[in-house]
Length: 577
Image (cartoon, one colour):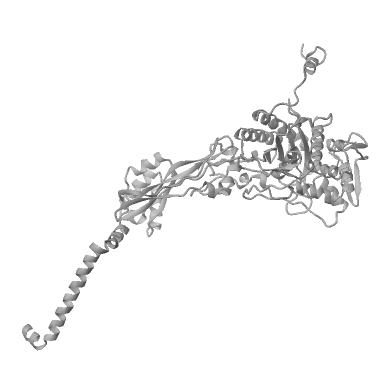
């Protein structure tokens, strides 16, 4: 029958043979092409089913203080993950896996069933290498490990507000960790491996790309001063029953922030019960009316006009001044009906300061405050930093002029206030602030005449050392300069001030003869012995400044002479017999 059909239709038979030959030829050619000529195609598809790239973790850069002491380091940890699709095939192992992981078997089973359609879930993160290896040695089906890094902060709560912290994925979330995240973050590498269809490692082929660790960052902070500031600020809050506080120390010559302490604080290594309020870097975020601590700035404006000299007199009797429906009062009893400019600062006379402000005008005070950085961005680039508010009016009425001169009607931060005092201490040269260690000191801008700044240094020294001065701020062996301040706290959401709620402040620098360090202390809502800045904040300034000058090896400028020592030790003169 076949012969008959071939005989009857020879052309069809030949066509079929030709088609078969073409198909066999095409297949043969493709086999030769794939195996000899274009063999990369099969290799690529084979590799796609077996070759994998595993990331090589890169640790973040080290954060240190100015002397190389570590403030943030990366430690290796193990993260355990699972493939629920694989685990669904071995239910009998679930209880064992949960037991090894230290998890509840029922909760573990529910979690696997809820993610049955996925190929990846985390089981545990941030385990120590020993803990991770203890689980992986069991070679549980569907359970795998990843090498990662986690941040550890050796100084803990002492530097928490400055350094900040990272999240579980090692990304910066607060403080320096956030503001310098790109600098600190490393670049992960890649390792080429062979895996079977179940994802099990068969062979470690090669390193495709090496991991690049993050760069080291040396802060301006001196850990010794930071510990000192932290301790004394914490003690002050306990002794005065205060709500919160801040303390900032700045190098007058370089603009480096040597210490920045805040209370309350937190431990960045254990944030399970962290309260949001404890995370506030109050020195940069909290704004407040600085009160009498700005009187030296207003006084500088008066001296700069040339209309006033330190020996000029101002009548302050009877200790009050009526401006329309407002009454300006001197809180402290003054030494007499007439005070010179230094006396106004020593007695913190609002009346005397207001009369000087009326003479020079609010615009002159505003300009001086602005030049000293009040209400201006510090340039530190710290996350959440606020600039405060320095009002400028088209027409400066008496009430606005007076309140600005003695520290009300404007808002500032502790870091701005210490920068202003550092500029006064640096003979009127404003050096940019820095949270990073400065190797090449930038050239400062002369924002206040040197003669004015030096005059203010001497006047502020008398504020501390005069018989009616702020004696609690004194530092043994050193002359220091400064001004206390007490400001009522503004009400939140309404106009006016909160009843019996104050901020106690002290701002100053030392040694007075050649200033090196500037410092601001802010104590929020002291509730025990008192609330005046000279009573609450000045002692903190004195203790921290004394320790800081010695730690920095700053030479004393107020050692007693031989005659003084002899007189003090002589019988009947107060010395010991």
